[in-house]
View 1 (spheres, rainbow, N blue to C red):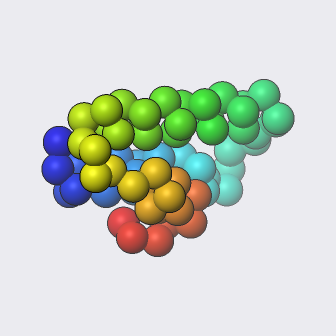
View 2: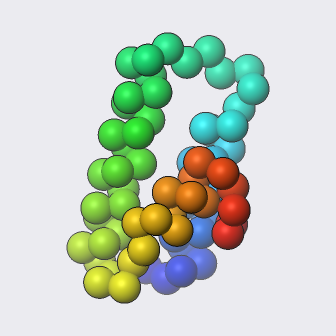
Length: 65
């Protein structure tokens, strides 16, 4: 995968995360965080230069996407 792919996926996850109509409880938030972490693990296994911090920042803040 390429940086472009990582950014596109982070952007899609950010859209889900920042949806103002989503009614999330603690369990849903924990599930979302689990998904983000597991996706990041797959990307890191694919690319040793993958940066967890940048990816998570892009997911949770929308920066870098």
